[in-house]
Length: 181
Image (cartoon, rainbow, N blue to C red; front, side, top):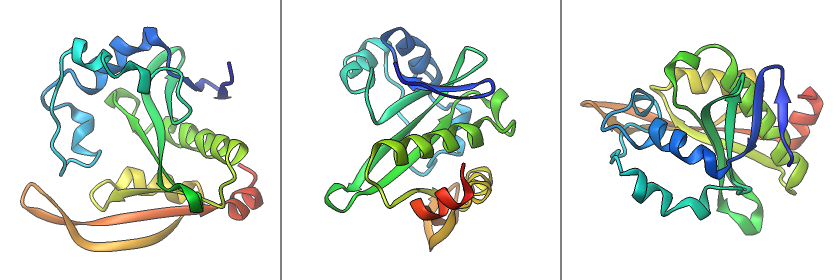
């Protein structure tokens, strides 16, 4: 099994025995803390574990969805999806569900390894993500990794009565290799 590791942070494919933990972190609760930062303007609907595992074939041992571990504890996931596969336009994401691990550098390490994996395994010219202007930590991670703010679509995300900007950040393979992450 291929894994990526930076000190105590490990990226690896999701295993079937991870499913209960992932469900508990992501979809068990009505209003989990992580959802306040991860696109909170989209509705979050909890599901039962039984319903969650019906989707296991799209979660376990997939190329596009991996687990993040810190010291053996599963704390989040990284993922990607194709915006337009024929032109290799890929968007990636990261969620650290457990707030105890926020602001500790774990997300930066995990996303750096994910970028390395994506550039190592796919014929990409660019990787990127979309977030919102209220998620200062995600924007900061992008900046730390050398990403460029490629787009700011103003006042397009309504959350708790406030309009926020949609933010798109990206990184070219050449820029990544120049920084040798």
